[in-house]
Amino acid sequence: MIDPRYSIINQRLEKIRRIIAVSSGKGGVGKSMVSTALALSLANEGFRVGLFDLDFTGPSTHIILGIPKNVQPREEKGIVPPIVYGLEYMSLVYYVGDNPAPMRGGDVSNALIELLSVTQWGALDFLVIDMPPGIGDAVLDLMRLVQRIEYLIVTTPSLLAFEVVKKQVALLCELKMPILGIIENMKMSKSDAIAKETIMLGIKYLGEVPFDAQVEASIGNPEKLMATALGSAMPQIKKALIDRGNPNVS
Amino acid sequence: MHEWALAEAILTSARQVAEQEKLKKVTDITIRVGELQQVEPQILRFALAQMKTGLFENAKFHIRKAKSTLKCRVCATTWQFSLKNLDKATAEAIHFVPEVAHTYIKCPTCGSPDFEIVSGRGVWLEDIRGAKAD
Ligand SMILES: Nc1ncnc2c1ncn2[C@@H]1O[C@H](COP(=O)(O)OP(=O)(O)O)[C@@H](O)[C@H]1O
Ligand SMILES: [Mg+2]
Ligand SMILES: [Zn+2]
Picture 1 (cartoon, protein in one colour):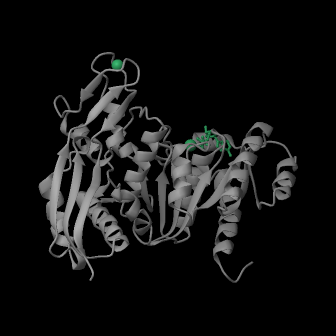
Picture 2: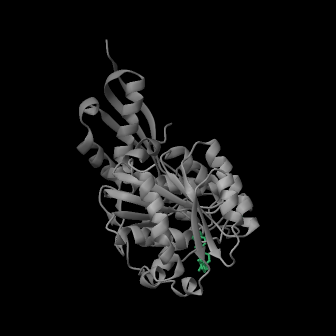
Picture 3: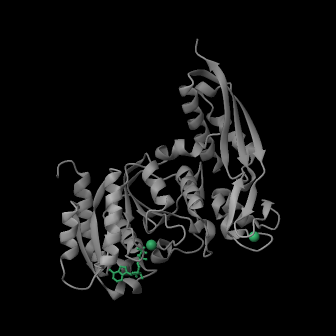
C-alpha cells in the first residue's frame, strides 16, 4: 500500500520561488502577527504572495486579516486558494469554521499532507507559512517533505522564549535547514542580550519590533496592522529576505 | 473537481513504482478509497482516464471502497463512519480534509472527539501490474 500524496507535494509547490516558514519553538511570541504583516508587506511591494496558516489547532491569521466567513477556496483540479487582501490565502478554517479541531499529532500531519497535495497555488514569489509553535509532528513532516523551506524565527526578549528558540535553532542546523534569521518581537527595553546571543549562535539578527498596543487593536484590520510598530519593522526584515535571494548580494 | 488532484497524485506515484520495477507498460492499477473521504469512484475514474497517457495508456483501474473504522481513545468503542446525520457542508469538509472529522463527529458511546481513524481514511495505491521491458 502506497500513500500517493507524498509523490505530488513538491510538484504542487513548484511554481513558488521561495517558501518562508515563520516559526518559533514558543507560542504567543507573535508568529501569526509577523507572518501576516510580512505577507502583506511583500504583496504591497508588488510580489505575488501566498499565506498558509499551518497552526491547525490555533489558527489566527484569518482573524488578524478579518476574513469574511463566506470566503472559500474554489474547486478546480484541486483546491484553489481565494485571494484576500492581495494574498493567496489558505487555512484549515475553511473546513472547520470557528469550531475546535481536536487533532492529535498524526492527524495534524495527515491534514497537512492532504492540504499540501491538493492545494493549487499560483505562480508565487513568496509563500509565507504561519507555523504552529514547537517542533511537533506537523513541523517535522514539513521539514522532511519540503526541504527548501527557509525559516524565519520569532522570539521575544524573554529568556524563556529564547531558550526554546535555541533548541529549535539547534534542530534546524542539525537538519541543515536554511535559517533566515531571528526577529526579536515585543521589545520593551533597550537590552541587546538577544541580539548578542543570536550572533553567537551564528544566526543573523533581523532586528527588533517594539511592543505596541496598537498591534492587538489592529486585529481584523490589515491596514491598521501595517501602521503599527510591527508594520514599520517589515522593511528591514523584507530587505534581509530579498537580499538573501539575490545572488549579487552576499 | 478536487479528485483531479488526487488522481494526479495516484498516477505520479504509480509512475515512480513502474520506473522502479522497470515496467514498460502498466496494465492494472488497484486503488483503495476510504469511505471517510467519500471519493466517488466514478469521478476519480473520469479524472484518471483524462490523464492516462504513455505508460498508462492501456491501464485498467480497479477502484475498491474500504469501510472506515473509528475507535474512541477514551472508552474504546469502535464504530463505522457513516454519512447518516451529517449535513452536506460537513460531509464536504470531511471530503476535503478527512481529519476534520474530529471537529464534527463524536464517539457514539461517550461523546468524545478523541478517536482514532483506524482504517478507510483516504486514497491508497494498492497494486500495480504491468509488463517488463524485454
Ligand atoms: N509587537 C507587538 N506589540 C504588541 N503586541 C504584540 C506584538 N506582536 C504580537 N503581539 C500580541 O501578542 C499576542 C500573540 O501574538 P501571535 O501572533 O498570536 O503569537 P503566536 O502566533 O506566536 O502564538 C497577540 O495578542 C498579539 O496581539
Ligand atoms: Mg499563531
Ligand atoms: Zn468513547
